[in-house]
Amino acid sequence: MPDSQETLDKMAGEIFELYRLVAIARSRRPSGSDDLSETEFLTLDLLAKEQPRTIGEVQKQIGVLPAQMSRIVRALEDEDGRGYVECKINPRDRRRINISLTDAGRKAYETYRTVRLGSMQQILRVLPPNDRMHFMRILGQIRDAFLQVVSK
Image (tube, rainbow, N blue to C red; front, side, top):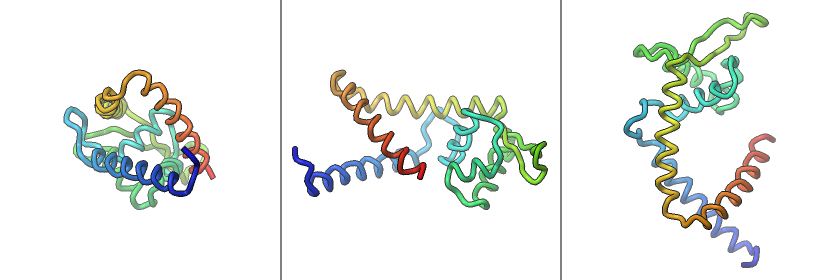
């Protein structure tokens, strides 16, 4: 298949349609997982990989405004007894606040992630094993291209 503009347009259209469907699926709360918003999950995901982080670092990484980040932290910190994160003044720079995952936060993160991965596995089962291998290779290339774009 030649690399024409029409082909690229069709491929981009398919990816956009997939993105749209994923966005719809993500907006629905999966049964069996905690009632986390997408930005709350992204916050927990960053902290699960490295902590503590400053609130400003997390805010920049997930791409929200400072006021939105304040709401996310409040929701994760102790609203409704969640206690998923803990905030402390940064010992090196007292103007900054460090945020860390609590045991409850790690559990909520793992539960949410497990439920979402299960949904993805269910969808991927429609592909024959050989197609899954090819898909994974291509998906890795697309992920790498996305990383180059978002890291600029």
